[in-house]
Amino acid sequence: MQRRLAIVAAAIGALLGALVFGAPAQAHGAMSTPASRSVVCGAGTPAQMNSAACKAAVAAGADVTDWDNIRVPGVDGRDRDVIPDGKLCSGGLAKFAGLDLPRSDWPTTKVKAGATFTFAYKQRIPHQGTFRIYVTKDGFDPTKPLRWENLESTPFLTATNPGMQNSAYIMKGTLPKKTGRQIIYTIWQTTSTPDTYYSCSDVVFTAATKATSGAAPQTTAPQTTAPQVPSKEAQPSLVPQAAVQAAGKPRSRALATFGASAVALLIVMIVGGVVVATRKRPPPKHR
Ligand SMILES: [Cu+2]
Image 1 (cartoon, rainbow, N blue to C red):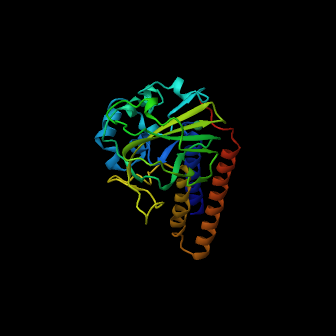
Image 2 (cartoon, helix red, strand yellow; image 1 turned 120 degrees about the horizontal axis):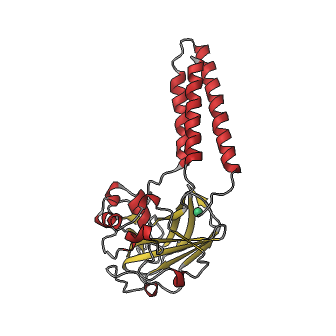
C-alpha cells in the first residue's frame, strides 16, 4: 500500500516538475486592473472573451493566450518613435494587431473621475522597471485608431519597482478628471530586460460621488476586477489533498498514519526540491 502511495506521490511530483520546468519561458505582465485588452480577451470572464470586440480582435490576429507578452526590445524610452501611430495597443506587433481595432464596444471598467485608484499589473515573470500610465485626451474618439497625439503628453502616474500582491504590481494613484469612454495606456519600461511592455485598458469615467470616492472600482457587466489569470502557484495546493484522500484507505490507523507521513514527507521533498531548483535558475531568457 505504501509503495503504491509512494508511486502515486512520485508521479505527482514528476508531473509538477514537468509543469514548472516544461513551461516555456514566456510572458511577463499586463495591466489587469483596470483590465487591458489582452487580459480581457485572454484571461477575462467568458462574457468578455466572447464579446464582439474580443472575437473581432482574435479574428484580426491577436494571440490573447499570450496576454502578458506585448513587449518590444530596445525601445529604451523612445516609445513615440518606435511604436507606430494606430498600433499603440499591440506595441506594433503583428501577433497582437487585433488589439488595435478602433471600436467603441471593447469591454470597459468603470472608474470614478478624480478618485484614488489602485492599479494592478498582473505578471507571470517579475522584472525591475518603471511604469508610466497615461490617459487619452478629452474628445478621444474610440472609433478612430489610437495615435500618440491622442494621449496626454505626460503620465498621470509613474511608479518604479512597485510592491507586489497576488502576483500583481500594485500602484496607487489619483485618476484624472475625465468623462466617458477613454483608454488608460500603460508603458512598463523594464530595466532588468531590454523590453518595454504596452497595455490598453478601456475605461468609462463616471462622475465622482462624495461618499464613495476612493472605493474599489466597479466594472461593467462583464466583471473585470479579478481576471482569472493562470497562476503557477495555485497548482501545488492540489497535491496534499490528493495525498490525504489516498492515505485514508489503509486498514489500520497506524499504517494509515505512517503511509500519510511518508507520502507527505516525499511530497515536501519533491515540491521543496522543485521550488529550490526553480529559484536558483537564472531569469528566463527574452528572445
Ligand atoms: Cu519578461
